[in-house]
Amino acid sequence: MRNNWNIYWVLFTFLGIHFSCSNDDKVDPIFDVPVDQRVSQTLDSYEKSLISSEFGWKVKYQPKNSIGVYNVYLKFNADNTTEITSDFNRGIDDLESTYRVGISHFPELVFENYTVFHKLYELDGFNLDAEFEFIFEEVSADKIILRSKTDVGDDITKVVLEKATAEDKSIVENLRDFYESLEFGFKTESILRNLVVANSSNQIVFNSTFTFNEGLRQGVITTFDQESGAINSQRYPIEVNLSGFNLVEPFVYNGIEFTQFIYNPDDNTYTSVNSEQGLIAVIGYDLAPVSTGLVPALFSEEVDNFGIDFSNFLYFDDSSGFFLRQTSEDFLQLGKSNDFRVLDIIFDDQRFNGLTTVELVLNGKPPILMGFEVQRIPGERIIFSFVGATDDITPYSSFVSLLSNPNGWYVQRTRESRFQFNPSFLLTSVVLPNYRFSVYGL
Image 1 (tube, rainbow, N blue to C red):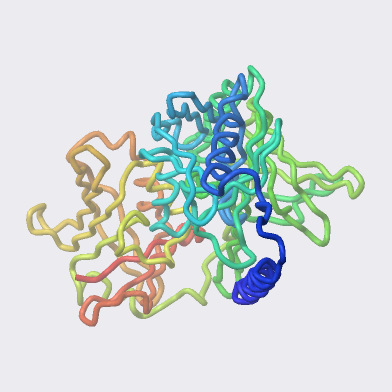
Image 2 (image 1 turned 180 degrees about the horizontal axis):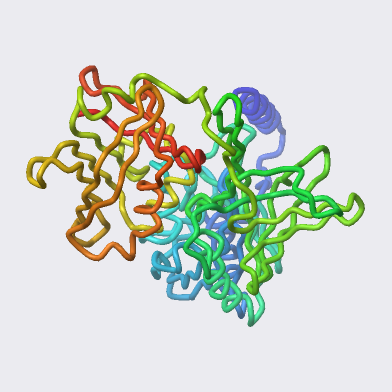
């Protein structure tokens, strides 16, 4: 920027010297129209371009190119209102907004009221790098290119508005229906969702688990090491379409790429075929076990005093500033599908005859309290056996089934807690080790 100003200074100095040394009494103006008028004309033409599209504009919005794609339809009106239709959060945040075409340092487009763009701006603790103020970069009859106003450096979000057709708004609305099956699945109560790769003999050559984060538009592929007990998760930006979804960056197995996954509603699977290599990648439920037995690497003597040194343990999901990030994506998604954001475990709860109680704090509903008996296998694991609940647990049956699995949970102390007197612990399911959640000891 400094170099540019130096160039401008030299240019204007040269022009000043040139005109001051001229023998002519009258100097012709460089421009026929004053600067303010030229700026006003440019802004008017930009606004007319926004309004001109009969069926509005369609946008594939991907902030900072690091997360998945949000499909948005925009219709700009002459009264400075904007009709917004998106496939995010079932359209809840698609609020009508006024817009402004103005200038700060550059010509800009600003959505002035709270919209889906503002919601994305706030998402994930304001870490999405989404925006609701954009700078015009290129304007033509069929396409308008904007860039995020606040992005700096080389990593700039480019937003391309393409002229929409009469069908594009309804296409965006129809895409909303696909996210529920992608995130939570249909026709199953199972919580084990695999991504497997099989060869032409239908033998599984790669096994992992798959979850989808609708907010971030990311698929998470997680592998588990049976020997070390380690899990490794990779995130893949996703773009949903009417037949399934595409990975913005391909999933690669042994150098073989899988990008396009087609949904089959008959068996609730997503399938990607590499016909040249004779391999098929399938996302579906209960396709292969995650763990094949106990994992001594996850044993810990900390289980012996878990619930004794501290009697109360709290879990918070990622909507809270107290979220502990060793919690797995699988468990986070389970909490969302079961509609709880806080989990409170109280050992030897005297209000309930010494049972261990688990309270789920729900979204917009009264909490539900469940009772469990506890068994510790010294140096190995802890087992929760369900006894009863204060209310119908049918909506939370998948969580109860996981927590009370007779194989139990490994317990390990972690260094996640920021509080000196409240240590953190990680609980890992023995049979489904992709389900892990961290708690504070109180």
